Structures are given as structure tokens and as C-alpha cells.
Image (cartoon, rainbow, N blue to C red):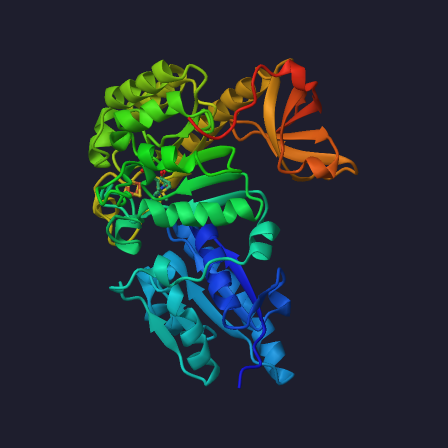
Length: 461
Ligand code: SAM
Ligand code: SF4
């Protein structure tokens, strides 16, 4: 009966949503949907949402408004367009979404994507469906694997979710409520997925999870495996030349993972390690379960293992009760660590989280002013970090064509983008690039002689 053919999946928020969006598209492909990059072209629009900050929720409702117009225009021409809302807003708000935005047909929580084809079939018959239960079956087992063509289309760098959910309950954060308790996928299931990606041309894999270094999936011997052990296993997959992982919690940075940075050439010397604040008072109020000193100790242990490691972080300013002195402690932490970059956020109260009820909510004007000061310092730190590469030769993984004819874009081990003139057939290759200049968000370079590189990193310990 189905005339539905094209699906447009739009992702908001983090890399975990990008991964989920791909897996939803793979699963819908099995039900006869092909992916389209244009919402206007689609018979089914899936909005994969994020509710980490309030702005993200506002964005969703304005996006629904835009698609509702398309839906109405299509209906006037006798064509049915369905709208599905997935992800963390769907999980948190459930039926409220349909109440507030009547154009929405399906609301599907983050653990139920595998049921999407059945829900869509019912929605075609006019039913409104809300499914935000935490199911007993494993969604990863039930989701379809991507076809080789779909993998190739997504490029040579892929995300793989290895862990989901969070048991940490930072007082500002909705993740433990929307993604649920921490679960880890078994090592061999992840390895099978990575082998499949590699055989379709993927060269770099980033392991993702809300708390990725709390990973404790079942190993081949039936015992829980650490993230370090998982990385060692994946470093053996032929074709995978770079491994990364994100996002980590300072408390879960264990000895085994730190040692992996010393042992695995394929593991990139770059760690994103959110700290949120440099003030112990704020860290306690945030329930981060670590102090400033604990954080600095982790950085020191990592640097002792691999001297060329670079760090980025997440910061929240304007958390309830934050004083000027607390904020100055955050600024001084920047100097002490020497970050290569960071994401910065003004605290956004999330309903249902303890911090939303705390006294001492900081006025928006104060948060904004602190945010701008922090961002200026971080931008300068990032510029200095990038400038330190001029005159050096670095290994670049070439990813895709650049804006100019004959140009390719790649990434350094530190995730900086590099623009370089090179032949398209080098996409997917690791090449030495002599860095000649920096722009606002990118490095510029020229292909160097292979001989100039001391050693090209390859997978394996
Ligand atoms: N699990 C990671 C960690 O331990 O920090 C981060 C997960 S969260 C998806 C990404 C970032 O969003 C956090 O590190 C934090 O800086 C920011 N964030 C989370 N909740 C927030 C809130 N209510 N207001 C502002 N920023 C928030
Ligand atoms: Fe949220 Fe990260 Fe804290 Fe978990 S550890 S509650 S995901 S900020």
C-alpha cells in the first residue's frame, strides 16, 4: 500500500545523534525508503532532536513549523508527508510534542528507533504514535546494518556508538533522564561493525558515548572489557588507520586507557575531556565528582604517557551560585592546562534537573559577559595552537574534495582541518603535509615528500 519513498533525516546536537540518524536511515532503507538531502523532496521527515540546552528545543519547534508548511502544501497536491520526532526531546516530552505541534505523526524515543518502520506504516493509516518506553530488547541488535554504498557515501571517517546513557547525574544535565542508564555494547559486535565499515572504505573510526570511557562491554572471554581493551582490539582491524573516542569523563580515565595512548600509534594524540569549571565549589555543586586537582592529575598522567597529546574541553559559565572568583578559577585553569580548544556554554536550566531548582541563578547578562570573555581566551589559545604548526610537517588523513578545484580537505591527528592541493585518488590516504599558513578555522599546507615523515602511523600496537 505504501507510496512513501524518500526520507530526510535531520540531526540536531551531538555526534551520537548523527550516528543514530544514520542507523535510522539504514533501518528505513530496509522498509523501502531512500535518503534525500532535501526535506522538500521527502515523504518522511525525521527530526532527530537534542535537548541538552533550551535553545535546541526551540530550534526543534521552529523546524517543525517550517516542515508543517511543506506538509500542508504536499497535502493540497494529494501527497502525504509524515513527520517523525526522534531523540532526546522526543524521549523527554513524549505526547506533549503532538499536543504542541499537531503536524507531528510519530514521536520515537532514543531507544526505539528499530521500531520506526512499523510505526511509520501505522502512521500512514492516520494513526498518531508515541513510543518512548525503554524497551527490553537491544536496539543495536535490531537496527539494520548500513549497506556498503551508504557507508561509502558518508565518507572515510565514521562514528560508532559503543556506550550509551549515563549514571553520573551531573546536576545540570538531562542525559541520565533522556538516554537512561549506562549500557555498553559487546566488543565483538562493535568489531564486526568496524570491519564492515573498513571493508567499505572507512579509514578512521571515532568511538562515541555520552560517557565513552565508562565503557565496560562484554569481551570475547565473557568478561567486561575496558575502553583501552576495546581500542586495542579495533586497532587490529585492517584498513583502520586512525582511532578516536569521545566524550570522556575525567573520573573514568583509567590506567589502561592512558596506557593505550602510549601503545597504539593509531590512537590519535587528542583527548576531549570536559571539565565544566575550574572552581572546586562549582564542581561540587555540579556533582562532577572530581576536583580541579583530580582533573590536572589526569592531564599530567596522560601527558607523561604521550608528550604530544592535546586537550580540548567543555565549559559551563553562569552555573547557579557562580561568583566572579569561581569564574576566574575557570580562566586560570585554561592557562594551567593550555587547551587546544573548547566548547563553551552558558548554563541553561533544564526542567527536572537539580540545578534548575538551585538558588543563586546567575542573571543572563552576567553569564553572557563571562561566556564572551571565556570564548575570547579560548579562541586565542586555539589560534596559538594552530600557529605552532606552521613550518611543521604533519600527517594528514585526506577526507574529501575542498572548495577549490584540485584541492582536498583532510585532518591532522588533532582534528584540525587542512586544505591541500592533491589528486582525488588520495582521498582516504595518510599523507605528510607541510603546513604553510593558518586561517580562522583551518590550516593550509602542501604535500611533502614521503621521506620527510619520520613514520606514518598505521593501525596496530
Ligand atoms: N558526558 C560529557 C561530560 O561528562 O561532560 C558531556 C555530555 S553533554 C552532551 C555535552 C556538554 O553540554 C557538557 O559537557 C556540558 O558542557 C554541556 N551541557 C550539558 N548540560 C548543560 C546545561 N544544562 N546548560 C549548559 N550546558 C550544558
Ligand atoms: Fe551529563 Fe556528562 Fe554529567 Fe553524564 S557525565 S550527567 S552526560 S554531563
